[in-house]
Every structure is written in C-alpha cells, then in structure tokens.
Image (cartoon, rainbow, N blue to C red; front, top):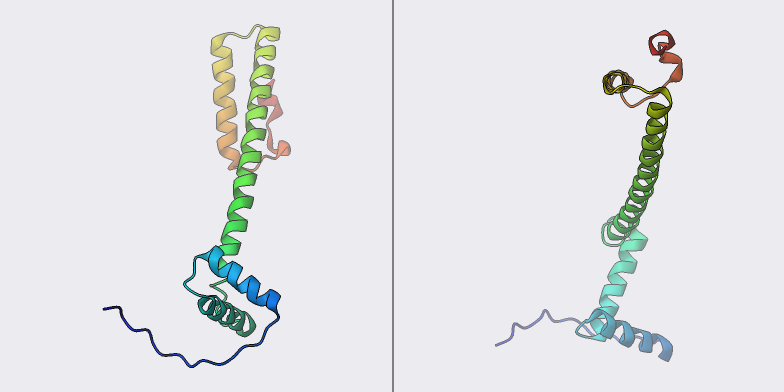
Length: 136
C-alpha cells in the first residue's frame, strides 16, 4: 500500500496559457511528478529568494560552478604559460652553455647557486637583492 501524502488544501490559480505551458514543459524537463510539484518548488524558491534567510538553495551550486570553472581556466592558462617558459628557459640554457663552453661541473655549480637563491626568495623575486659580485 502506497504511503499517503500529507493532505494539502487546493486553491485555484489563474495564469495566462503560456505560463501553464511553461509549467508543463519544465515539469517534464525536470522529471517532476506533477505541475503542482513544479509550482510548489517555484514558490518555495521565490519565497526564499525574497526572504534571503537561506541562500544555500540557489546560490551555492551556482557560485560553486562558476568559481570552479574560473579556477580550472586559470590553472590551464598558468600551466600553458609555465610550459612555454620552461621550453624557452631550456633553450636559453643550451645556448649559453654552448656559447661559453661550460663544463658539466660549472653548470652543476651554477644550478646549485640558482636553487639556493630561489629558496631564499620564498616565492618573491626582487632583483635588488642579488649579490652581483658572486655571479661574476
């Protein structure tokens, strides 16, 4: 035996035919049981919107979706730029190593110095902080 739903009073609602058609279309599109369910959901949403006591129903999913998409787009752009910079940096390193005939030891020492410098920057690069005499 099916569980009986809570009784609800029935009152007539007058709307233009286009609005009834839209209700029926959205009821089917959302897979709801009835036009009444769609109208109850719409009234509940609109009431919450006007009272603004709980924005969770309509703002959280929207904001989460928009912010997530923006973050993914930013990550992809940054990754592409970093890849291009890495390729350019690698090419420049090969050019310099070839032009100056640096040995593997000299390149290794230079790399170690660069790594130590980068650790000291802690993510912030300021060219005024370099010890240029050490580089010569």
